[in-house]
Image 1: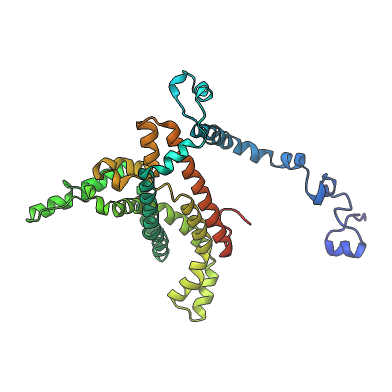
Image 2: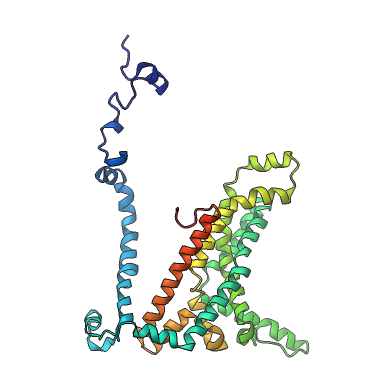
Length: 344
């Protein structure tokens, strides 16, 4: 009977003094660089299928995101698109002004008013909108019947696929001056109301529209996190006498904490983007004093007034501030013991 010269396990290798790698294993033949890492060519051959699969997405990002970033150079120019039929040639022929456009932005009171409206809407949405998906996910997860849970989840997720035009139209037909509620009140002798044109409560209206439209997406994310919690933990806690509230506090919420931290970091990074299309559709109804935010401010000056360099400078300021907020929020997540968007 022939015996193999390669040990069958590491315990046997310890007794014979040989390891599978030393006996001609494939891993020992792979060329490694400093620190024992595989060479770039080996890693490329190993992962070439995944690289080819991600290549279309990388090309889309390159063409539509990263290459257009080069257009921010017009923020340092007095850009005139009519200098040439070719936009690239117009950029080359436009005179340089340095930081003059940024000085104009910082001296414009309308810009600071847009910044104020942006942060007011952000903090309001952070307080009123962000907890709603968590609470609804906990409520749906507590439903015993799977069919009822699936129906409730589908109904809440459906508005996420609606366009902002449809969302604003629905709110107009319900809360507008000619909406269902106002007409019902008039039929019963009341004067009625028109929430859609009231600048004082516009920020609450915008938040309610966002909750109705996008809360379902957050529910999906949090339900996926809840599905990863082992049932053994709940059973063990119940056997130890923990009630529903204690199980939720000590098991459910700690399981959701990494997802909450990640979404919170992303939300803070998106603080200066509070809904361009949503606000632009309702800007005329309530006026720019209530509906003007940074996105609509940049659009109005860049597209309507065709002051492209000024709008590019304002947009660049917004991007730098947004990046700073992401870094700060991610640092806070690290201090809380969470991973955030990226590791330390």
